[in-house]
Amino acid sequence: MGKKTTILTFLKFMTIGLLLVFSVYGVSLYFINAEAKISTILVSAASSLKPVLEEITPIYEQANPKVKITYNFGASGSLEQQLEQGATADVFIAASAEHIEILHLQNLLIYDTKKIIAANRLALVVPTSSHFNDLTRLTIDDFIDLTKDEVQQLTIGDPRTVAAGKYAQEVLEKSGIWQKIQPKLALAQDARAILVAVEKNDTDAGIMYLTDARTSDLVTVVKISPTDLHSPIIYPAVVLKSSRQQKIARSYIDFLGSKLVQDILEKYSFKVS
Image (spheres, rainbow, N blue to C red):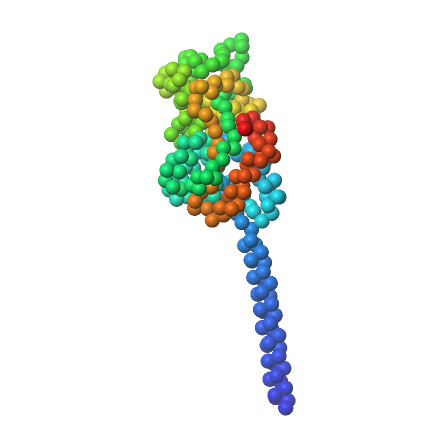
């Protein structure tokens, strides 16, 4: 009986041990599944929107605690090319309708989700410390002044990939000076890089979004481009067909059109409807 009791006791403890293991494993599974319920969406967005999107993200996430937003900022053309080549994203926000239409033609978008969230303007700027905005010396007041011999370098976005650069080229072409200023051009990789070049006084002048220019005391706006010199500067947002979180992506775009976000966009000098 003593031997049988020992075996029964052993089996009892082994069973309890196994139950504990399964219990702990079950708790582990619960926490893993709980974490898995957090949904992440990736937004590929024009770099000129970076300050706004970084400000609104905590607001959206607080209202949607099971959602996390991540960003891939860059030049609209570069982002478009990435998506064409198979890069993943849930939402694309470009600084030009052209890049949206290119992806639409390739059947990569849920086109009925497209929403124009803001518009922008283009500005001719110089470094605040530059002698070009000192009235006792040389001046740059308008685009035509960029042809002066004293102006040795003009920074714009690369028109091939940067929407701000494409708009700048249109302004310079319609002003009749595109060919004349070719030797002076320095091409930036995205809209924010133009701002950095002017801030650091690495260039005599730059053509950038007004919204970027107004974020820095190191930059002086000398001319806002008339809108008839360039295509409309608009920011369409759209959901990608490849998105695995289409419901959340749609919700995010709806959020971008809310009054709260529109007010923040206006604070950064974007134009809203």
